[in-house]
Image 1 (cartoon, rainbow, N blue to C red):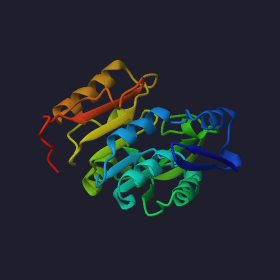
Image 2: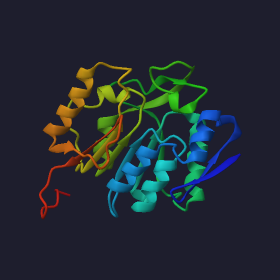
Image 3: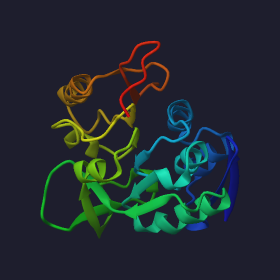
Length: 228
């Protein structure tokens, strides 16, 4: 078991999931650094948070410390990561954060499961990637948004985001931060994402954006709070 501390969060990584690249990033403090900074800047007390692609629970724990843990719903498809996330939440005193096993899609389907490709390097695991295929539960992003009604959505789903912006989101969204995967889709998909956010009253947020991590925030005035 490898142990690290990043931004006040204690992280454990089992030997079986530790690749040299991931261990180096954790040791240097650069693992999910942009996503972590975005979470710190967007999650506020009382906010409900929906995290799609929880990884090993690092950003999940950060979010849970900044709001009530029960307000955080983290979704992860890779079954090998679920006990790791749960243990890391426990390490940081936020074990009551909600954790769900599912692959999130933007396409409505009646099939309760789907194939998910598990890579030797867990961050590369995805619905459309290469790796060992496992059957996992699947859920529509729109169902999660209606259920949890998040103020903040954090998303790192290795290209599955391409289908998650086909219609308006049913939630009181204030911040959305996602990692783009331009090698997996055409520039028109990025335009679709930006246009969809704009139609929902969201604008580009330079504070939570960096490189492929793209942040949006609700448009409101200096003295006007967004609708709850």
